[in-house]
Amino acid sequence: MRYRGEITVFLSLTILCVMSLMLGLLESARTAGARLYLRMASDSAVSSVMSYYNRNLWDRYQLLFLEYDSEAAIQETFGRYLDFYLEQTNMYPARREKVSLSGVLRMTDENGRWLEEEIADYMKYRVPELFASGSGLLKEAEQVKKAGDFRNLYDSCRKSGRAVRRLEKAAREVENSLLEMETCKNLFSNAASDESASALKRSARKLKKEFQDFPKLVEQFEQEIRRLEKENEESGFKTVEDETAAETLGQEISACGEVVKSAKEHLQRYREAETQVERNLKLLEEACGYLEMKPDPDEEDDVDWDAISQCADEMEIPESENSELKDAKKVAALERLEELFDKELFEQLLPAGTEVSGRAVSLNGIPSVGKHETGSENTGSGAMGILETAEKELLVSKYIPLYFGSFTDGTGEADVALDYEMEYLLSGKKSDRENLKEAVNKVLMLRGSMNLLYLLNSPDKKAEAEALAAAVTAGIIPAQMAVSFLILTLWAFGEAVLDVKTLLAGGRVSFWKTDATWKTGLSGLLDQSFLGETAESGQDGRNYTEYLSCMMFFMDRGVRNFRMMDLIQWNIRMGQADFSVASCAYQIEIEAEVMQKHMFFQKEEYRGTVHAAGSY
Image (spheres, one colour):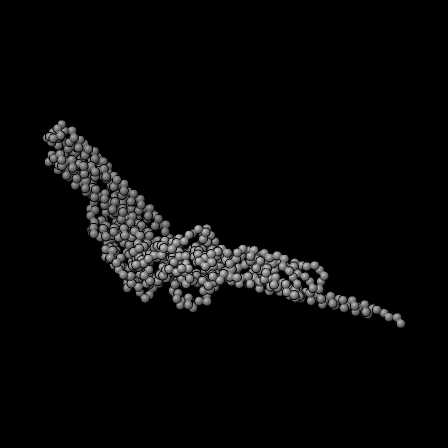
């Protein structure tokens, strides 16, 4: 019997095709599974790497950052965890070929952006507490920005007002010199009439000195005019957005312009008088020559008294305007007040018995040195970007007082490099004393600016200042309005002194002044009795730490962030000497090359690449 094999061959070929298809589909599924397995393995490995966050940094500041010795150490750690998965016996045979670190976002990158991100992520968990304790802080921080307009106005009024006062004083000295010339000239004429050589010599010496000093006084007057013009010109370049500040600045610039105009008219008269004074000096020298030409020094009858009298009669003393001050005591008090405010008030602002911390650090090699890039950060665009930035800034501003101390928090902690940390964030100096001094001065200027705003909106107090200005100006030049602005700035500064004393004593001061919360009277300001007043704290208002937070809200973010890193690095090094914020990663990106094998193909190994990223 003859057998045929067509069916067998057909079925064999069919089975081979079916099996190839099935094994191909199985290998395809296995390959897809291998990719997922590698993805899972790499994600798990990078998560294991990120678990090596610095515990000291977390325990102290609630910040999660991966501290690493080198990029090679990260690659090695990642590879070790990845190998654990690759070495398992399963359907996904593979071996690690190479691991490379493709990207690292460090704490110091982008002006400390990732430090802000970590702070914001942590503070969001404290949002209820945040807004319960910080209601109104964002609004008042906006007013700190507005206070910048009044700071410009404050500086302008004070500088220009003092320039006007110096100008008026110089004019008064010129006018007094003319009056003194008139007096000495009358004495000289009387001595010539009485033919008294000794009296003539005495009056001649005084008169000669006045004639010789007069050009110097006129030159000083002209210099003061130029100084006031310069101050007024600089005031014109200042930009203010607030309507009240802009209006007042315009009035102050206009008033100083009128003062300059009037002063130049007086200068023209003084220049003409200078010519006459030069002629008078020649006549005086001629008259003295007659006295010296007598044959016998002991005989006054030999003097040509007629010639001397004629010289005296030919002298013409320019007429002087009235330069008498209406209230010399108030003028002297105002000058003493200006001298007081020119001095350093730091020690007087501190509570009695306060011992300032003597701690200091070295600024060499700290993160903030040479790292900050102004204007390089991306703050977002559009309304959403602005809102996100404002929210983040609020979260950071509330985080800072929680983890960084200030003057009112007490001193003496052993595990901090500086006691006054918030002051360092504002000032960036190497010692607690320097940081506190600069921070206090900034708060003082802030309070002075806001107090000036109150005074400008108080008709009664403006009237008091104008009355005092009228009493301390001589009326030679129209300086009353400019001087009244100066008095308002001094008054605002005097009240600010009491405000800062209250804040440093642990009290609270309302951001906006009212008639009820204003403490300093103009009389107490002039006699400086306000310095002896005891700092009183109200129930409302902000404390010293909150004032610092308001000011930091609008400081350069990069500068603030790097100074935070300075403090973090100094303090963590108290327990970990080799800590460095430059080696703290917020996010890492790793690329691994893996050699894989097929299970159902006889092909050689094939190369696969997997990317993994981990962040906090």
